[in-house]
Length: 102
Image (cartoon, rainbow, N blue to C red; front, side, top):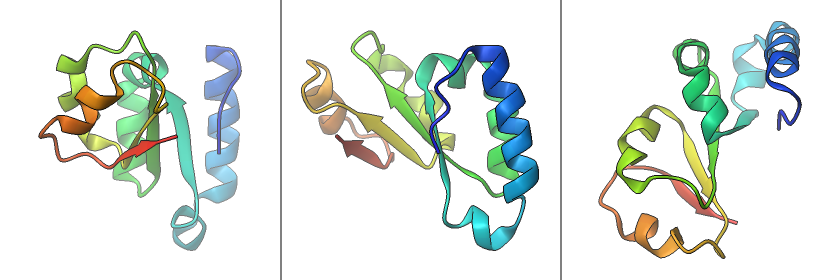
């Protein structure tokens, strides 16, 4: 599930989707993909979703500060484009993250 709309619309859409998929069996099959900046801006909301059994995948981009990797440990996955300059450094990091190159 990828939310690629304006920030306000994202939260409205996310709330409607959560109402639909608020079921343990469905939650196991769905991962919510969110951009890093949105994850940080709405960290409280995403943390609540994680506590309620939802999986979050955070998409990081070229502007990502590698020193912030620890902030992503609560997410299930970290997504990164293999073509980004920071990709090798993130892969070499010692953080216990599920990093997926795309």
